[in-house]
Amino acid sequence: MNDNDSSISKAFELARERYGELGLDVEAAMKKVDALPVSLHCWQGDDVGGFERPGAVLAGGGIQTTGNYPGKARSVVELRDDIEEVLALVPGSKRLSLHASYGDFGGKLVERDAIEAGHFSEWMSWARAKKLNLDFNATLFSHPLAADGYTLSHRDQAVRSFWIEHVKRSRAIAAAFGRFQGSPCVNNTWLPDGAKDSPVDRQGYRSRLVEALDAVFAAKYPDAELEDSVEGKLFGIGSESFVVGSHEFYLGYAATRKLFVTLDLGHYHPTENVADKVSAILPFVRGILVHVSRGVRWDSDHVAIQSDELSELAREILRSGQLSRIRVALDYFDASINRIGAWAIGARSTRRAFLAAALEPREALLAADAAGDGFTRLALLEEAKCLPWNAVWDEYCRRSGVPTEHTFVEAVRTYERDVLSKRN
Image 1 (tube, helix red, strand yellow):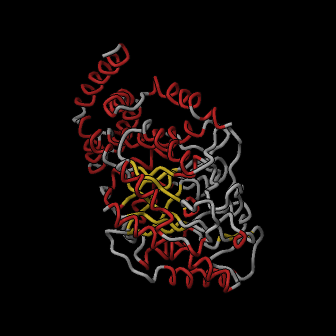
Image 2: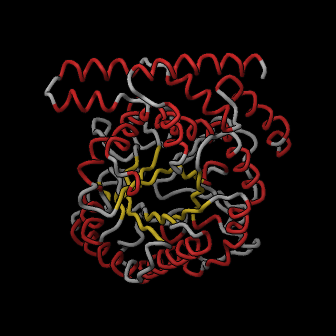
Image 3: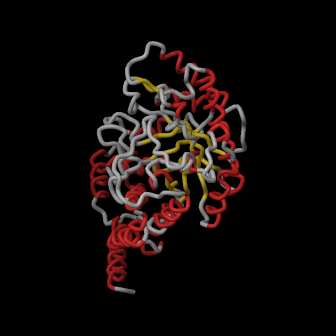
């Protein structure tokens, strides 16, 4: 044991004793949080580019990545190398979320209404070797047929049919993932449809979207293979005045079609409390998919950090007692800083927020709640903020064989020096 390990162990023993005074078992908390899967997102590694159009720089449909930090992944092989590095930097159970545009297309253009599970066979084999389960997303942006801002709600039947077929095939691929890995694949459907200025026929767009989605979800797959989720949004680039698939639209759709609904931390008004939505929504939908992101003044997809919003959401998820119906995934992209570091910071911050939430003095808080003792409840909540959960985090990282906060930055810098810098 080196000096750093020794100091971590000493701090952990003191933290264990302090939490024990509150009746909390830190070992149980670490075990619970370790088992919670967090789905990493492939698109942080190459700025949402994908590999369906070799050499193309994809953009549009409300997607905008800023920055050009050196070392971007230029191929599926490089992207997988980067993902493996991130996996080595993050503790706990992990999955990987793929977008449809990230298939192994062999340098040939395969249109999105023609993709098949075979285009992802190498991903499946790689994931199995890494003991990693896959999730999936249809890609309804960065395409000529999405250039005017509409896909499944498009006025043109031919355009709608193209995108309906794409999402149908995406669901079939996701189900194939689920069968292959023996774990349900979470398939998220988000589309950028909306208008920069206010339209008149809002009803028309939404009626067409309902019809298109019903066609998409007509095919039924076993629950053991596929978990479908739909994702709303407040507004986006080019859809500032009108979003067809708003939160209310998808909440109603998910509730009536028995789907998961996606709550993205960046897709709501800054004054909305996303954590409060968990208990309000769970009674009516199949489940919730959380997209961990960070909006700064708008849905800007900043790197996730252990913010008050994320911490409160983690607490509310654990308090709900409904972990079996909640999925957690990352969704952001930042090319202004080291991409590997950005990836790992978001994943580590998410896991850390859940660990801190698991170390909340829950029983004492529930007792204060039941007694109507608002003072004690508030005092305990304030005390929980300054309990030594960071010492438990360092010990958790050490046991997991990943860098602690003390060594994390150097690990990222080493990969940048040895791998990323050679890509230029």
